Length: 106
Image (cartoon, rainbow, N blue to C red; front, side, top):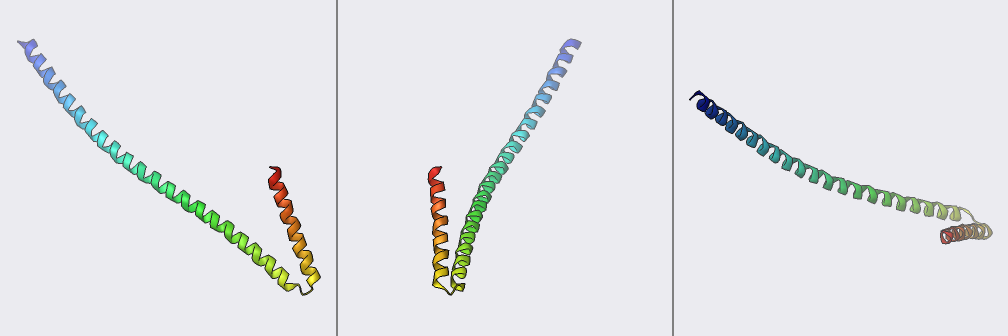
């Protein structure tokens, strides 16, 4: 009879431990889903921020090009002699030709 009572006690204890384990697993699964949602949200934010960085870089490049054009224009406008202006234009054309030949060689 003692062995039977002990077996029943062990079974009840195992059942209780199993239920506790199930509850803990359910909690872990819920936390896992929460963390997956947070991870997905952070990945989306990361993508958006990378796009913004790229856009800002492109904008910066465009502004740099506009600044160069403005500088060239101001340089040309400061020169009163047409010969100086022609020399500057020729220099710019040679520089452009050099860039084109460099790109073509790649």
